[in-house]
Length: 147
Image 1 (tube, rainbow, N blue to C red):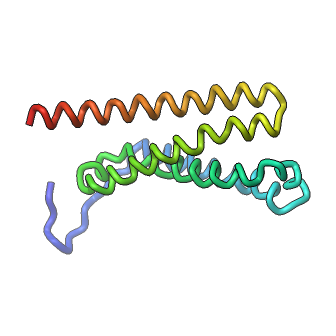
Image 2 (cartoon, one colour):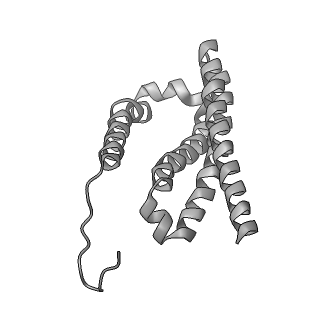
Image 3 (cartoon, rainbow, N blue to C red):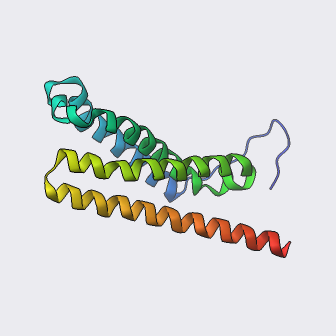
């Protein structure tokens, strides 16, 4: 469906838009109510021994969490293929930075149950990202071989 220059396209509201808006709102609430007080009050001393680990973990984790919904956008994938690929590479790199760093943070912060939870969550994020990357690479190699 193409439109002439200067004409407006009608975008329909879909359930995924509500889902993304809900996740965005939840992330904002968590940041304001729970994360920001740790930075702006004395409670921030709790994380003093891991503060330099939190920087790459937080930046890479934020990048991954912001980019992942965009990877599921059919419109972006169809109309901006190169941008989709670049964002996908940044997402994969961000996951492979943020997830492993969570384990030493948990080891330094404790308690022991946090260490196991961190290992399971990080492992799950790494495995699912690796599976997605494998699917992308094999689908691309199949399309190159067939075309």
